[in-house]
Structures are given as C-alpha cells and as structure tokens.
Image 1 (cartoon, rainbow, N blue to C red):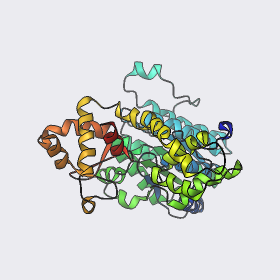
Image 2 (image 1 turned 30 degrees about the horizontal axis):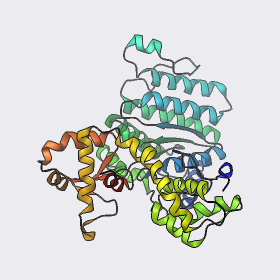
Image 3 (image 1 turned 90 degrees about the vertical axis):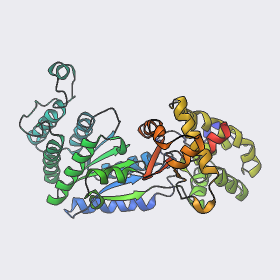
Image 4 (image 1 turned 180 degrees about the vertical axis):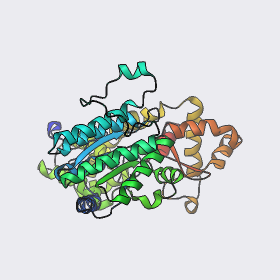
Amino acid sequence: MDPIRNPYAPGAGQRPPELAGRDEQLRAFDVVLERVAHHRPERSLVLTGLRGVGKTVLLNALRSQAVRRGWGTGKLEARPDQRLRRPLAGALHQAVRELGHPQQDESDHLLGVLRAFAERDAADAKLRDRWSSGIDAPAVRGRADSGDIEIDLVELLSDLGGLAADTGKGVAVFVDEMQDLGPDDVSALCAACHEIGQVGLPVIVVGAGLPHLPAVLSASKSYSERLFSYQRIDRLTREEADRALTAPAQSEDATYDDDALAALYDATGGYPYFVQAYGKTVWDLAPRSPITAADVAVAAPEAERELAVGFFGSRYERATPGERDYLRAMADAASVLPDEATDPVGSVATADVAAHLGKKPQSLSPARDALLKKGLIYSGERGRIAFTVPHFGRYLRQQA
C-alpha cells in the first residue's frame, strides 16, 4: 500500500479522518449551543475518560462547532505547576477577539478588565513588569483584580457574559486536563459557572480530564454534581471501530476483509488511539487491498513496538525506580484477580498492591501519590487505583 496515501492519524490530539462513535456528543452540544444562545438554562460540560480515548480530539471538535456558530472560544490546557489566571486570560483574550463586539470601546473595556485579572497573578512587581499579557488595552483597575481568584473569576466571566449577550451569541471556554487545576482554581471555576448559570449569561465551560475528574470537582464544591453535565468517553464499539478504519480506507480506494477487522478490534480493544496506530502500520506494511488478517498479523509486532516507545514507554520513563515497582505490582495484582472481582476500569485495591510488594500500604503512599500527580494512575474510589492508560498493565507484564 502507498504510504503517502496512508489516511490514518495516530498523533496526540490529532483528529482522525473519521471521528467515529462521537455523534451523540456532537449532536448534544449543538443543542447546548442553541439553548444558551436563546437564553435557555443549560449546564456546562465535562468529558472524562482514559488517555487515548479521544477526549482532546472531541474537545477540539466541540470548539469547532461553537466557532461555526459565531461564538467566542478559547482553549487552555491545565498543568499541575501552573495557576489558572494567565492561561485562562490568554484563552479569554482569543474568545473576545472571536466574538467581535460591534462597539470597540465595550470590547476594549472588557480586555482592560481581563488584563488586570491576568496581571494580578504576579505579586512580585518586578516579575509583573517582565511578563506581558499580550493584551493591548490598558488595565482597568477595580474589577476582577482583588487577588481572590474566586471573586475575580466570577466578576470576569459575568462581564464577559454581558458582552456576549450584547451580540446575541455566547462564549465557550475549553479546558483540557482539567483534573490538573489546583484546588483554589477548581473552586473558583465551579463558583463562576454557578453564578453565570443563575443569571442566565451565555458562557459555558467545557472541560476534559481523567475518570476521577468528577470526584475532584465534587470535593471542591458539593453542587458541582448538578453544575455540569458529565459524559464518559470510552472505547469504540466494534461497529464504530470498523467505521474508523474502513471509511478512510474507502476514500483511498482500499478495503479490509472481515477477518482483518476482527483481528484489529481484538488487538486495539476499540481504543481510538490504538485504532489509528494499528491502522497506520497495517496500511504501510500490507502489500495490497483488500487488507487481510494475515496482513494484520504481520504488522502487529511493529505497531506494538511503536506503541511501546511512543505511547507506553514515554510514560513509564517518567516514573522513578520505586514508582516503577509500584506500577508493575499494580499490573501483577490485577492479572491474578478472578473475573468476578474485576471492574470495567481494571482497578486494584491498594492493599493488594502492598501485599504483592510485601510492604505496608502506608510505606507506599509516597510512590502512589507521586504517580497520581504524574497522571499515570488515578483513584476512582477510596482504596482502589487504576492506570490512566489503557493496556498499560499488559505492556508492563510484557516488559517483565
């Protein structure tokens, strides 16, 4: 097969040629945009799922829907070592520019408030002088610059919502890796969403994060369970995975036989990133169309090697030797569980991991906490942990 015509896209956050299995979320978001634009009450949205299920791709697709409707949009990626003010200011700066308010002085005033909000992050005057927000308007003092992130964010989004309401459109803020926001920032974002929802302003937040994100939000504000619409993004069904493979191939006059599609689903488990990675490798190595199960068997080792380096290995390398021991113990503990003791996410009890290592659970807390902060594992419920990456346990056992 001609590698130049290879249609698959296994890049991080890169939209595949066929966005299979996400039609329901796209349709639902169209309804949200229409309702908000018509001043109907609607909740902000939170997407959750493991790594590799396409949360970032879907987040970008939802943003494109908002842009097509003339909304102002901005996107940021949360990081554990960064506070919210500056990246949010950058995202909202773009949203104001996209919104295109007909009265320039109104936009300039809001940008001045936004600049004051951003600059309030630098308590040190020397640091503030060296940092530029990129906002041309002069800072407007006395609004959204108190230093209390919750007060300031409520004021800022309220002003932004008023500006959007003047245009008959709305503003959508997209936050990737939302679980990495600090506690104060999570609390402030929930409070701001609560306030703008109560007064009916056309501003929504669309967040994406790991499966424990709802617990992070709930721990911050108890009402967050009613504040957001939660949608779990999971692996593709067999039919959806087949469509993700066959639709791009058909555009290049190529096909798969049924046995090849079955073999690919067994290998990928329906996880979108794996579907793209295997599809790309199989295409490059298959001699001709139709692609067969024999072609998949030949390509599978190469696909696994690439995943071992780029997808699994890069994450494994971030762990210290002690943390790697913990990860391997998780994989081994999960592998010996009877089927009736396993759950859909493959979690294991922290006590079982400790028993496998022959140590007390308390002595392993530093390693567990470090892995949680690095985003390699997560805790969906007290006393249990799981990998954030699908098939990671299988990778670790193969490495051993």
